[in-house]
Each structure stands twice: as C-alpha cells, then as structure tokens.
Image (cartoon, rainbow, N blue to C red):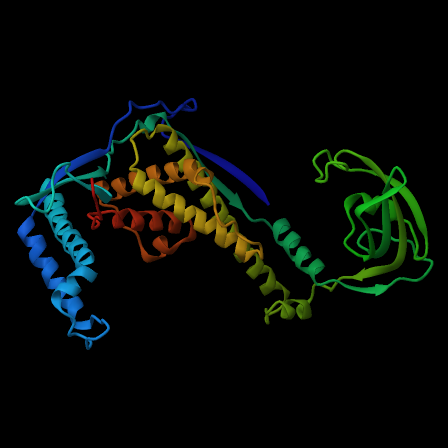
Length: 410
C-alpha cells in the first residue's frame, strides 16, 4: 500500500504553523433580576397543601381527614418550596426570553439579601452564562493537509496472507526436528535473579513466547533445555526487576509445525465468498479501501480541528465544557468495561478538562458555521463515524437553553 500526502493550503505558499494567541479574558456571566409576588407563593403553597391533605395519614385519623393545621405542620415547608421554585421558574423563563440573550445552562438563583416571605414581593438574582460571540478566524493563517491513499495489489495480498495465517493449524513435529520460524513451541521456564527465583518468572505449558524467547528457543528440539540471560526494560513494572538482567532456564516440551491453508476457492468459501478467489480479492480490496478512507478522513478531520483550536480564542461557557467532560468520562469508562476492565469510580475532573474545552470550542464554531453558511448534509454524511462525534456535540449544545432553576436562599 502506498500513501500519498497532498497538501492543500489556503494560500499558494505554505504558511508557517500558527500559534494560538491568548485572547483577553472575557466574562460570559450575566445576571437578571427576578420578582415573585408573595401572595402568589402563599396561594400556590396552599394549593399544594390541599394536594398533600388528600393522602395525609396520622394516628387517630383516616387517610385524607387529617386536620389542615397538622397537614401544614407536616408539609408546609415542602409545599412552600415547591410553590416558590415553580413561580421563580416561570419568572426566569419570561425574563430569559425577554432578554434576548443566548443562555447556556441553568442559572444559579439566589434570594436578594433582606427579602423574605412577609414582603409584598420576593426578589431574586439569577446568575448564568451566555454563549460567546463567535467570529471567523484568519483562515489564511492555516496550513492544512488532505491525506489520500491507494490500495494496491500488494496490500490486498498482504491482507489475505494475514487472514491465511489466522486460520493456521498445527501438528506435532518429529522428535528430531528443531524449532523454527512460525512454529508453535510449548515450554516450561523458570526465571531467577542472582540465583533466586522471582515472582511471576515461572510457568509450565507456556505457548505465547516473548520476543527474547524466540531467539533462545529457535533451533531447540523437544526435550532439550538451556539457560540464557534476559534484560528487562527499565520500566518493566516491579521495581526490583526494572532494567535487571536475569537468567531463564527454559525447557522445550513440544514443537508443532504450522499448516497454512491454500489460497483457493475453498479458502474463499471459508471467508463467506462463494464466487472464488477473484471475488474474494475484489471484496478484500473494497473493504480495505473503505477502511483506509475512514481512517484518513479521521486523520484529516483531527488535524483540521487541531488547527482550528490554535486560532479560535473565544471563551467557552463552563456548563458546555462540563457537559463535554462528563461525556468523555462516560465514554472512557464504557470503553474500559467493553475490554473487561473495571472502570474507576471517581475520574478526576482534570483528566478530560483540557480536551473538553477544545472539543466544546470547536463544536460551537462548527455549529456557528453551519448556521451562518446555511450548510446542509445528507443522511449518509450525518451518520458517518467521522461526523457522529460533532453531531453529538451539536445536540448537546442545543440542550443548553433556559433550563428551570433551583432557588438557593441567601
């Protein structure tokens, strides 16, 4: 397979790599004043209390016949909180719509100091973030590459050979036959350091041989044994073995020689291709072209987004970043579970904070470009794997609107 890189610069001459300039800090935080008539809160609270009274229970009284004073004592605070939050939510929705601001996430609502339920009007302050003003960067400063590749006959044959090796079978070799390349060798081994056996250095019936064993075992016959030195990498794992030179006693118990299937019509049928070898090669080439195209699209997109991030300087709402961070953490945990690993219970916020900021910023920019340029996409383009991530980001961005707040007392 040969890969050709076709540079596609916006300018005719290649521009130097751009460095992101830090923009002056711009606050996205805004506030709105909210007010709710105290009489409405009390009236709605009484309505909620009447609802509680229907199901209230108390020793000595039948269900729904508990005196109202007792109901109020049991549920009065809850009914008041529900009424207050409902009316503040309505006031927030009206104020947010009237403001004309592009609001990101739910607000933090706090009572104005000194305001209480005895006053004619209850006053609150809603603090929230807005989406930033997005301006186009200087695209002439970007130096981008579009990657292309061709799938040749050699790549097809290499892939078929890999599939052929995956279907290898083994038979035990003659007793006097020495182990050689592609053989499956079963060994027992014991590792020692300065004459002392170390944990994890012993195994019996071991068939998955490490690289150093390959050279050591090659040429040995079943029943033979020998000792050889092996030096562990400096960051192997256990502190006492990092970079250490140890000795291994290895005994070959079995040598099996491989038998690879012949590439014929029967082999093609084993892969689900009924029309013979030629059709199999055509199918392999088609699948390779699709896989290569997908990987190159992802590589191109990743570099485009990386280049964009270097020139985009607008601030990103914290709520949007947090949503992206949580999504990344969930994907990470899901990926670990899919591999049979236990996902950590508490993933540090800092683990995905920086990539979440970048993804959120690029997502906001792409969303702005789509709206401003009135771009449309086919169903196939939308569901393409390379587009799915940005599509999910755009969907999440749309969910950040005038969410109902929860009142926090001053």
